[in-house]
Image (tube, rainbow over the protein chains, first blue to last red):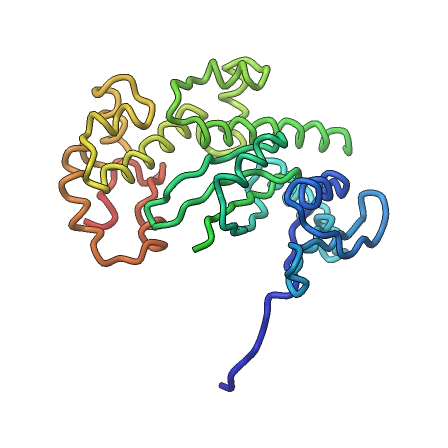
Length: 139
Length: 145
């Protein structure tokens, strides 16, 4: 197999409240808003960290693909509410300072900064849609 | 139907905050009454609803979280069983030892002696998966022994 040259361009995270998602990712985490398509609850927001235009997260209304059944949609949204559906790992050179900012902004905290037994220091919070956002101390 | 869904999800989101609080504050002297007060529901309601959503009671989830952390601290080898017991939120060595043995299948003192040897040379990401306590394996054999 030949050598491939790929970057991670976009990944999807479900967001059931686009305005709350925009506040969390742009106002609190400091991401850029790179795209905003649709209206009301059916909005797709493309966000990403300043200085890294090649990597974005698309915050996506959950379960809108017409191939998803009503029952499946109900399960997806219940799992989001109970916090067992989406997750993402971010990294920062200063996990403790980042945590302090997030806590001051009033986000839901899951884990304070901690040295994990596998050698990483990290903390964890929830985004407004219930996705687990783990923030790792960049090596 | 939409209202039923909305109410159920609001309840699930409340339960999620309770579970997150256990994950964050497990080393504090938490109990189900305190968790229920924080969520503005009765302890009985919280226990039933939490178990329906997550498959185990909030008490059981708290115990699992504490024991999971205790296993990590015992593995480091530089803390005594008593130090670990208090570090993960237990007020009594007897309770800690009983809960630990229920979940891990051996007393904390035995685990502390055996574990450093058993885990040597295994990549950390595998270690995390393989050593996480799992309720339905309660009191089974340690997965790496």
